[in-house]
Structure formats: structure tokens, C-alpha cells
Image (cartoon, rainbow, N blue to C red; front, top):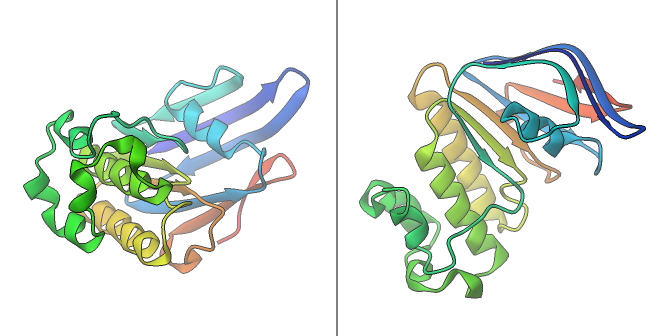
Amino acid sequence: MIRLSNVKAEIGEELLFIISELEFNNDKSYLLTGDNGTGKSSLLKAFIGEFPYITGDIKVDGEVIYQPQDPYLYQKKGKDNFALFNIELTSIENELAALEMFEMLDKPVDVLSGGQRQKIAFLRSISLAQDILLLDEPFSQMDDFSTYYCLNLSKKWLQEKKRRLLIIISHDPLEKATFDAVIKITDKRLIKIQ
């Protein structure tokens, strides 16, 4: 669970948003939307203490895995990004097959497409996450099949264990009906629209 109270994000004289009270509950999935520059990524960074321009009270109950828009990938081979975190490829064999990733695992990361890199980052994040999974534009460079497959994996991850929380930022037209709530940052406020 993540609880926000009297939160204000401000860079210099520019106000990004104000949140009087908001709670992201366990066992729920949230889609966070809004125009560019409204503070969506800043909000997720604040949850992990990586956004210094915020005041107020943010309480995070659980271990957080945060995947930024441009996640760091170890620049050797694709498979090294799993080995580095002791993720056995056999544990994600079905996902690797469905996403047609086996061939890319032996390639240097710097020759992979943006979508291929996002698949590696996403599978790494979801394999590591235990309590709270924050994904910032995780599917923006993936093809439609991969996007919906990974979105379904996210939902499956949420349901596999009690007390999990999933928040995804996206500009893509994801199936809003698959989320428990859709929250939009607009006019410097967070509005729950579903």
C-alpha cells in the first residue's frame, strides 16, 4: 500500500501537482495517465525517495521494484541481465518463448531494438518484484502482441500473491477496463476517472 497526504511537487516556481489525500491499495492495479510533463514519473520516483522536489507525507508499505522509462540494462548479453539478479531462465521459460526472446538472449544488448530491450527490462522487473511493482511506460516500444502479453503478465503477477500493488504509467491506449482504477494527473491534481 502507498498512502499520500498533503503532497506537493514543485520544481522552483513550477507546481507539478498537489495531492491532499490518496491511497493506492494492495491487491489493486492502477493506470496512471496524464499529459507529458504533468509529474507522473516524478510521483513514482517520489515513492522510492528519488524525487527531491516533493513535500508532504508518503508512506510505502512493502518492497518496491521501480522500472523507469529508460531502465538500465547490463551491456553484455541479454541473458546477463537475468543472471546478474540470479533469475534462472528456466523460471521464465514460457514467457521467453511467448515473447520470442530466446534468440535475443545471446545478443549484445546494444544491438537490440527498443522493444526487445523493454521485454528484457520488464521480465527482469516482474521476476524481482515481491510487493509493489511500479512501471513507467514499460510497453511504449513493444508491438501490440507483446504489450498485451506483458500487461496480462502484470495482472497475473498481482493475483499470484496477496498484498501486492501494481501501478503502470502509460500513454498507450491500454485496456482501461483491466485496471482497478485509472488515475489522471490534470490541472495539477490527481483525478480518479474510473
